[in-house]
Image (cartoon, rainbow, N blue to C red):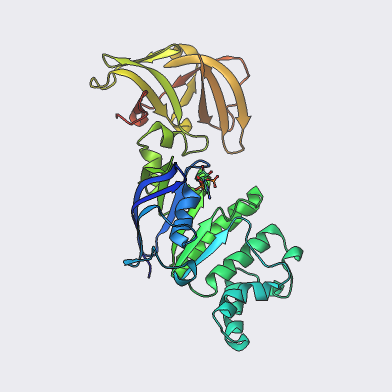
Length: 350
Ligand code: ATP
């Protein structure tokens, strides 16, 4: 079992503060994903948990015990990185078994555990190969096998799938999730890819400039982003964000007006709606009128970008609803799925 607690963590490099008062509890067996744009401090947070970086202040606890002063090798965790870190001169078998060798286990003791780890990631047939003779996906699996071979109490993974092509990434994502459930090992996973975060996580922690912007289950952050930052980060394509002004229950934009909205909302607000909640209609029957900017058939759906004044709004619609670029078109909002944010602060108001 392994829980991780971060309490008031701050980290500066010189005078530059990278992590700003971050507190987080990670539950036993949880798959926690740290998600955020490049430079927001995800990797630094992970490296502090690993013991590869010292926090400037604050405490790191694993299973309730403070580990700030414990070196990485004594924290009993396994890491998987983007570049895999395999030893090129060693066979797959020896790469996988290396952590056990370091612990002083004999070959006889290592061998069955190597075989079991290799089996879990379907590498059994490749044990005698060297990394250069493996595909990217196979190398990635060797790195995973090396992580699981000594049953650590915690997995730390930093963008482990980002060097794989799109198809392999999807496949490995599913394998990784399956493996984590099967091993029931607490996992902290860093990514800037929201699809990866949505599909893998029990809980997503969205970071922005060294702080936690929002955390919750994938369904929660998708359904109710608390800021335009999160709304614009989650979803593919993400939520449409349309700035306008609200007065007397009407939302006004150069492309149209939405009436009969809650009275309490006033001022410069940004209206949010997900592409799949919008519908196309002839301009005369629509809430907002504009023109078709682009139309992309995705196979199971069509993504139509509609130009509304300065904004481009994405509408996800049926596969047969392709549109002619430049043609007049309108959009109709799903009233039950509107989101409102304060334009100045970006914070959710409704
Ligand atoms: P990415 O997705 O690009 O890896 P990240 O969210 O993981 O981004 P970090 O790697 O944690 O971000 O880096 C956060 C910030 O800290 C960046 O601005 C980075 O330049 C800075 N930084 C990281 N390590 C150091 C260091 N050793 N010295 C100085 N600045 C650093």
